[in-house]
Length: 76
Image (cartoon, rainbow, N blue to C red; front, side, top):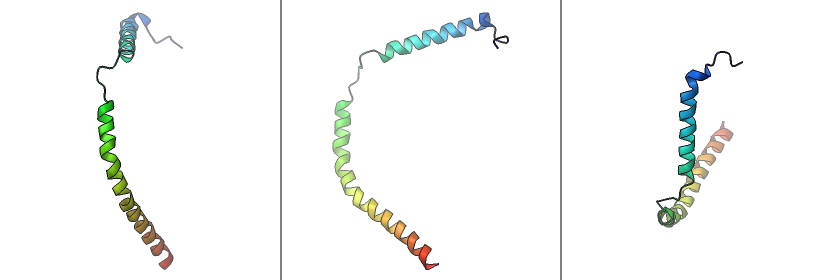
């Protein structure tokens, strides 16, 4: 099954991949430098009233579209 793979030629790429994975794992376990919780709270505070205002409009548009399709289906 492994007849075509020459491990001596690919040993450098395997070692480089292992080093890259190790470097990524080390960075993943690091303490985050940038805290985005304040930005997320601000965005949520801005979007909540906008979504509350947009939901009735979106519901009306969907209801009109579905109603039109049902009307066209039963008129035929």
